[in-house]
Length: 212
Image (cartoon, rainbow, N blue to C red; front, side, top):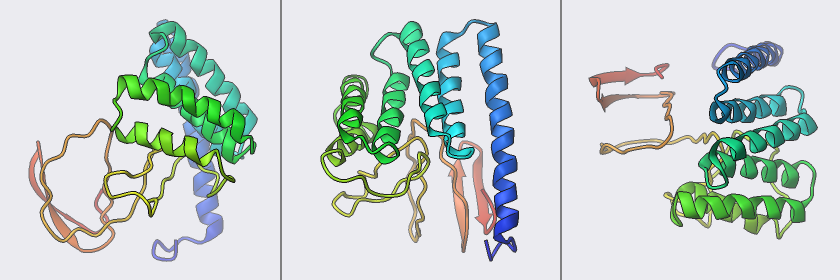
């Protein structure tokens, strides 16, 4: 915040405005997919709206209610074995454990997510490993900050076993070339210091501080 020349009150106002925009966008998406009766996309929209509720004043009960709606829609659209349903169960378990402090109930939700992810994504997929790790954590006291959109590196895990939640954020210094990697997600890189050469399907581009 200091580097950006922004004090806390400005930052809080910015976050509040962003959340309001996100709420409106989520409502528009829900209406759009409802109008064209796409239950799968509608389930995705309700799940996203739940994440917005989580941050907009920490509306945990409302977020859980939206996740239950998303779960029902996803079941109708895709049946039981679908990645979106696994994600919904994961987020329900995450809130139940870290917010409501009900590890037994959370463990049941994580088991359902794990069952789907093992069959759909495989035993070694990072999302599967993340779910298995959260299930194990339910056996001990809740830890960490209450956030759906963050992740930290568990010291007992190697670099390829980062704990995933819907959005993963990490800081990294790169001093050597990295080969091309295929991702099943969107990856954003924020350059905070130094410079680099980025290779992609758009060709070779130099990137510097402030670039995304």
